Length: 193
Image (tube, rainbow, N blue to C red; front, side):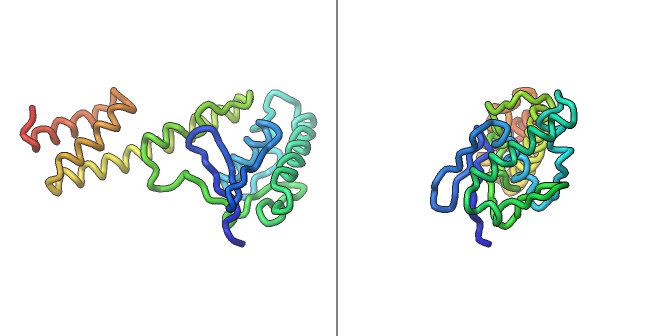
């Protein structure tokens, strides 16, 4: 199948069909469930894990009942495309990786990574911790890639570009010592002190 959905996950999460029509999830938990599945597309995620992720404060029977209702909401939101996008069975759920593309890519800038699901909370400690851990992981990876780019720019004699990159990194994390050191090296290369 063609890629049917675009997921915007840097910032408040949104999903759009290929024609630009927004997908409306009736509840935050429904959106949270689909966000998690979309980001892990191609992986079969167990219902028990998802119930614990979104309803850790409930007993397992109640959490599974809530998950069933939320799966129904997600299926309604996906409408006629549900069978192309989402695999649902008694033990797991899985989003077809060929049907969803997101703004979470390998060339994510640190300023984008730090915005992963910003402002989105569902009241589940486990889900909110997953958001935080994912944001940290994405930001570290994007920062490392940006530092490599800045080092390369400096090695190629492009101190201005190196300084531009590390200035952005410092604006995100003013205590980033490696970025400060590279900033000083770039300024020296440019004849600034």
